[in-house]
Length: 103
Image (cartoon, rainbow, N blue to C red; front, side, top):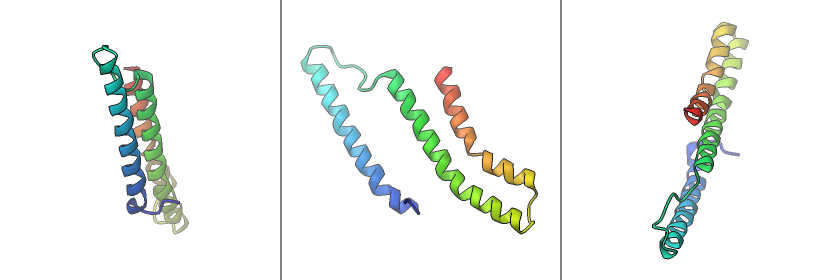
């Protein structure tokens, strides 16, 4: 389980290294075939990747915010409405990603 940013850094670095290898492989294959190169990833796949990463980021943010909001509600230091707004706020990231997909 990921507990801090330091835990996720090696996973992200490995994923970026793997992506760079795949992208370089696609570019060299396209150039060798005489196609003049092209996008290394299809448009639909890029959109899915963007929305998926936005959803993962929102979920990671909501994990801490939700726990803090519930704790504050238990101590009666904030109202229920503020707790709901703070919990839903990271989901706007996914909504913006979906809007960008259709625009």
